[in-house]
Figure 1 (cartoon, rainbow, N blue to C red):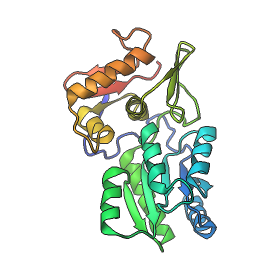
Figure 2 (figure 1 turned 30 degrees about the horizontal axis):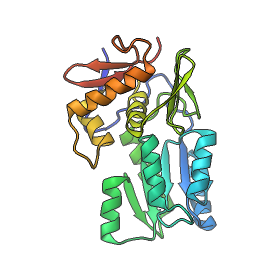
Figure 3 (figure 1 turned 60 degrees about the horizontal axis):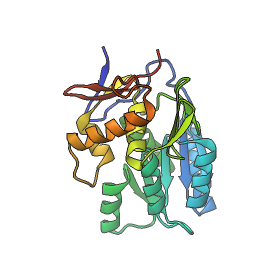
Length: 251
């Protein structure tokens, strides 16, 4: 019997194959080297692998080279592309949780950022152990990723996915994915083998927009047309009628 991802999001995506001890990756983007040093020290002490960059542009290059992290820490005030633009880009290619760490404490910015992007928002100066604790809480709530987060995730001989480049490779053919399709596939693959509730998907993919089950069905149909061997008989993205959708891992 397949597990169901609860609407509360609690403990939803943790793998049950003994891989809980797998590397946990955190991307830290801040233009202050001293802040980055503090973040790295605090999180490495808590057994995280930290990717540290000083700009949004470098962060995107790093994601392209290494794949996705489990969580991103982003400062709003960055040179060049600002932190909110980086958050937008991350949410176009995934549902990676974001913790904003910044000196910007204007209430309207805090509220807007949480509504649009952030799972949490911390004001500098900050307490390093508290930062690590908040990250742990977010990851426990959001769940883990069943597949390894490589630049190109190989599902089986037919299907591979590159979230950063927003494409799937199906039957050897590279196929562009829209931001919505990319995020849908990320959420389903993140919880591979579990049924993800329709209400959860709608809330995560269309947080700021009006969307209903019909909207979701249309996007699922389009995704299947790209990745499935036989879209009318899907083997990867399966409908659990009246409940939600599942990504079925090989075997």
